[in-house]
Image (cartoon, rainbow, N blue to C red; front, top):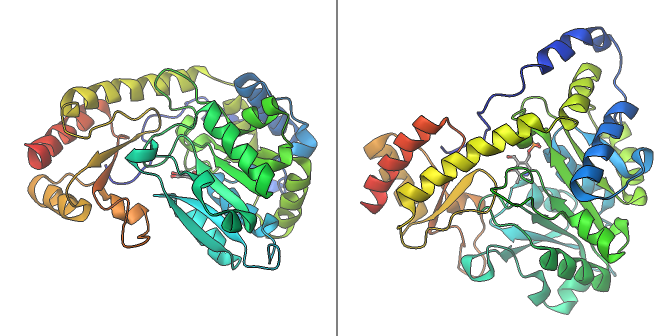
Length: 360
Ligand SMILES: Cc1ncc(COP(=O)(O)O)c(C=O)c1O
C-alpha cells in the first residue's frame, strides 16, 4: 500500500497486438508517434474534452508522462526570466519530478502548499506579483497525487488568466484523469480552449499507466500549443527514447477503447466505498474525488508508518516524503499516503488493520 503501482489487470488483447507487430522491433521507431497513434490520441482528446487538435503539430507521444514532465522543462524554460532566475511553481506535496526538472535547468522551484484549507490545491494567485512575473512554468496535478483533489473549471480558468497576466505556461499533469468516482474531471486544455486562451499556455500530460493499468508499457502523450510541441520534438529527436513500434501499435488500440477503463474505474469506486465504510468516521477523513490514494491525517506520518509496519505488516508512505518544508512547515508531516492498488479483499484486510492500529 506504499507504492502507487497499478495492480488491476490490463486488457489481455494487447498481447496479440504485440505478437502481430513483433516484426517492427526490427525498425527504429517513429520519434513523435506513428500517425495512427497520434490519430487515436487526438480522437480520445476530442471525445473526452471536445478539443480538436492537429495531430502532427499539437500532440507528441511520450514514453510515459514522467519523461515528458521532466523534458518539457528542459525544452521550454529559458535560462533567465526578465533578467532574473526563472521560477517554477510546484504544488506541495507533489510528484518529485517537478522539482528535479526545475533544479536541472537552474530554475527556482517554488513550493506552494496544497492543504485542506485550500481544498488541497495550491493558491498560486496569492503569490507576490514579482515572483509571478519571473515564473515560467506552473505545475498542477489534477486529479492530485497524493490528495485526490480535482481542479474545477473555475480553478483552471483562474490559473489560465493568471498565466496570461504573468506570461507563464501551465503544465497540467492529468495522468489520473480517468480514475474518477462519478464525474469526469475537467481538463486544463479544455478550459483554455473554452476561454479562447492560447493553447501555448497549457501542456497536458496523459498516460496509459493508470488509465489502463499499463505502467510497464511506458506510454503517454503531451498535447498543447504547436510552438511548445515543436520545441519538445526538437529536444526529443536528440535526447528522447521513443516507444518501440509494436508498443505504439498497442497504445493506439488502448486509447481507442473505453470498456476496460470503465471496468477499471468501477473497481476503484468499490474500493473507495469500502474505505469510506471502514474509515469514514475518522476525524479529518476526506473521501478523495479521484485517483487511487488515500491521504489520511495522523499525528506524525513517519511515526504512524513505522508503528503500522511493526505492528501489522501494512506498509504505507509518510506524507512528508512527498513534500518539502517551507517556513518551518511541512504540509505532508501529519499525513500518510495509502495506495489503493491491491485487490479488494487485500485492501479490506489492510484498511481494517490500519484503522485498528492507528485510529483504534
Ligand atoms: C502525479 C504523477 N505524475 C506522473 C507520473 C508518471 O507516470 P507515468 O510515467 O507512468 O505516466 C506518476 C506516477 O506515479 C504520478 O503519480
